[in-house]
Length: 256
Length: 339
Image 1 (cartoon, rainbow over the protein chains, first blue to last red):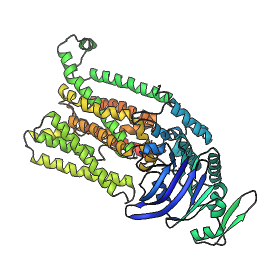
Image 2 (tube, rainbow over the protein chains, first blue to last red):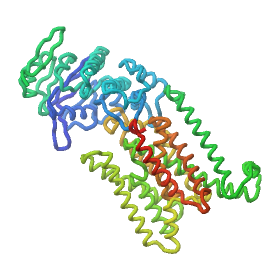
Image 3 (cartoon, one colour):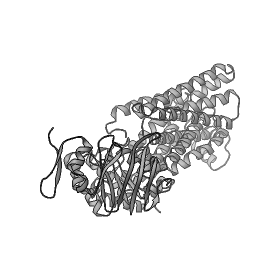
């Protein structure tokens, strides 16, 4: 399965935020999208998710243009993982995960037993079974992020689009989320992830795109894209990529 | 397919809903028995078995029964509408009153009363007025989306739109005929069921069902709106259709209540809160619980209104006197956010 973004320009009305965006994402790949604040990541995400139409270009899934697809059809292929948030009502974790079934349920329907099983399996895959009846508003930020990933799994889409899944999380929770990201890539999902942390892309990405001022600076394999030169150009910062052993590399500024 | 046994927590909630149904029937029965005229049990049974029993039968069938039926429809309708609005606007503070729906419906109905239109036209004008007020509120609040807290904006705009419609109601009262129309409009605005008859009830049943049934059918989908427009869309919901359907049906319920009983405030705000405290926020259970609790509450309030004092007290005054302080109590004890 393949998500293809071809020379897409996106933005609001007359204001183009990003243009000339070209990339491909297949099942089993984790593509990290890096870029400074205001580089157009969020707008690009919204466009891919069908929340706003592309100003130019074409977004397709398995060769079929997604423009004009009803949200319901798109949601069966593409699941969105927002940043951990707090809804106004204290839903149980299970209720939150069950909202994933919206695209599979009629307007006048509600989740059936099989929907419930799908939700339970998704929670189990994220190690959340014990929290199923907990209030979503009362669990930790890291747990909330995992709930939202579980919800995306219960949506049974092929591609997961994650908006900074590790932001606002403490260090331990960030690593727990990253481990799940790697697992999901192994299970054959296509992942599109934004992040502000080059380290995360270094350890989890199979593909990286570097966005700057609404244009792609570089894209390709992590080793080719996440170079000191490219990152320095993207962030206007003197930095260094260091191998710390154990197959882990980190990106640190040369000085602060 | 068994749709009841979906969630583990549903077992408990199924019992709660059953309990509410039992309470509902019990309160309805009890409300039939109480009143100024003492109807003995024998008289009630005779009436139920269609054996005409003269005066008791007349009081039960023509006075108390329509009144209790109206309480059920209005209480259930306002509470359901309030719960639906709260889910749609992601805000436990909104209610038919706060969005301007009641004021708009009140203006429509007052206009119709002044013009001496029939009962259907009063309901129609009330619905148009209510829908107009809610739409204006939503549109203006949407325009002001980028000016800070959207929830606060919505509530403030709703209050402003509500007061514009209330001012127009005052204008109608000012121009209305002092001897015939003004007292009618004023009394009706206070929220009263004292002059209700079976014809009024019959005319209200259909719009109440038109509003209630679709909301009940699509109640699970209201959950998804609580996560915000964009997330709901990404989850595959047709948010535009869902939003307008919920607004239309909830406003219809509000308007029917206003057309039948005038301004009965606070039910749509307080009852969904209580229901949420009992069964949690999942609309699958919350909406039926709100409906039953609203009906029970209004029957009890009406029992109080018609038997509590030597003269009958308008319903709207009692609901405000009970609802507003109770809401303050809820505000002070809300520890876990809005439950």
